[in-house]
Length: 590
Image (cartoon, rainbow, N blue to C red; front, side):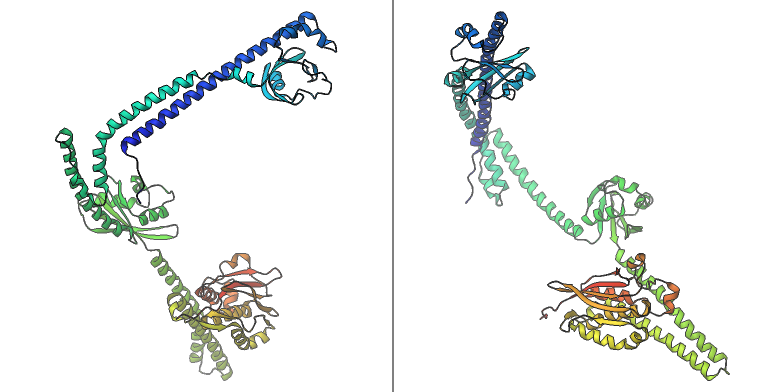
């Protein structure tokens, strides 16, 4: 059901009514408050006058304000109103006289009374409050003199309230004026509403989804009718043009906003005409300051090539020209420029970080592989050349060279195996099928594989994993995780150490594994780099002790393949500890 809306003339009346009602209410409240304040001040002045009379009487009669004071004040009390309460208080707040209290010795100190505190500060003070000694409300006024306070008070009853109550004549006058203006508002809003209703109906009809109702609105054959007819014709033409522009704009927006490239269109004067979201993101990544896209963009060092290109190639239009590449804040971008016939131009920023990073990683990995292959290949070549050149080499020496060559081929095989595995994890992870993997079974198999190295290096292997612990993953990769961690201990931790494998925590979907040893650990600066490919703590020593330099990189990639995380840290009691997570068993996919 459509909610009810007031007609325009009703709205005009309502707003004028509210405005005038607020104005009238404000005037009445102000007048009432002003008159009440005036009458209250008059009452205070009268009470001040009584206090002055009492003070003058005390001075003229040289009263000592002692026990005989009530009898000495009889004459002046007869001249003052009978309901007037008079209290004299010394500077310490003790009562010296009160014409309506017989026992003033047991009355509490009056320095904390509001009117006394104000009189102490300003000379005069007033308050309306309940008297604790007489249990009734008074209108108090206190006046401070040299050695005492004189406080006069009237009972705050109907009589006193009427004294300070404002008169109602202004309220009656304002009410009559309000009703008169209200009648005028009804008349004026009615006249304005008739003139605007027609225009209102026309506007609402053309803003509706079906504006055919606009054709049914007839205007009188007057100048106003001619203007309205022309408005209708202009509206139809503008609507058709607007629809065409909206369609074209929608096409351009969809094209630019969904583009993976940053697109910015600029005028001949280098002012931005249109930029998509990616362009803004890319520019803010490149530049150090996060300012809005403006003409100042081309004054920066990164985009100065664009300005130089525009100055030297303004005769060619409609062709995409590569302007250069930008490397900033760990990102790489290619920059292209297209000049249009009106000398406006378009800049295209393409994020080539991934391809550039991949290229650099492949180049680095190729260099590392070549570097790692050089040592075993050189050794094998040296041994074989020696055997070929020295024909009289004894059989024992030949066998020694062949055994050393064989060891180098094993290192080559290990390196090739690790390179193939880490490349497959990074570039073809879909080739690794997931299955249920029993961790205890994997560790038992590794224990048998490393039985000889464990015995040779006096390494204790403590497997604290329950036999029923199983995870969802690829057995080859999980095997590689534990194998490379164990091999890392065997190769680098030294002799007489202990290996411990535990599950220190678990969640609804993951097991938290701890793999630790009691070796010598590593320096803190190496912990964050241990998982880098071909990273070595001691280039000379570790290369001689074996290892491809890819073991921990394989561990990290294999853990990440299982949507886990891994960190390395030194143990408090010595040695190294790896903490990583693996997924629990999940429902099989159908």
